Image (tube, rainbow, N blue to C red; front, side, top):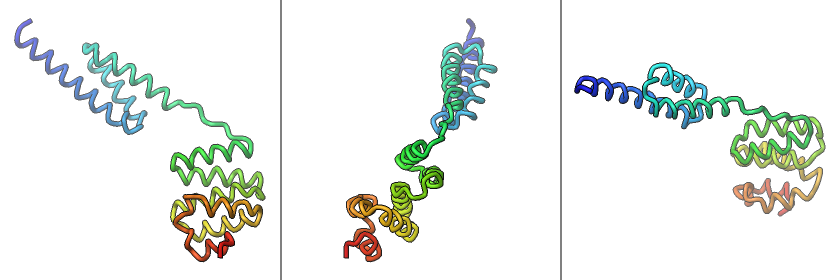
Length: 170
């Protein structure tokens, strides 16, 4: 090859590498739709760069899999409750509250739902809503009083007079 062809080849590789780098950014952020578009562009525009095209195809497949994850089918009280706990553990409190509210509609007198919702509101710093729900949970089952007094999520409230009153710690 001549120097000119080498330079063209190197320039093409640099462009493909830059495109690959740009595609990886949304992929790493979890924006699989955008990443898939950019990986497809690499396949279309840089087909001669076999190594990068192969990688782009792999990541394109991964993007497709992650975009089409099967939706969780929630039907029963336990489904909503358990998925709500899962969302709490992920830190997705708003979604957890929606799921727990659905479970509460199915079993309005289930104290563990009220207790978990109180826990979420405590984590969010919404103490009045927390107290309201915690009181209702304890009214349904005094066991939640013991749990709340020992639950680290409520630690910030342990010295609060209202918390003590609700949990009978006065």
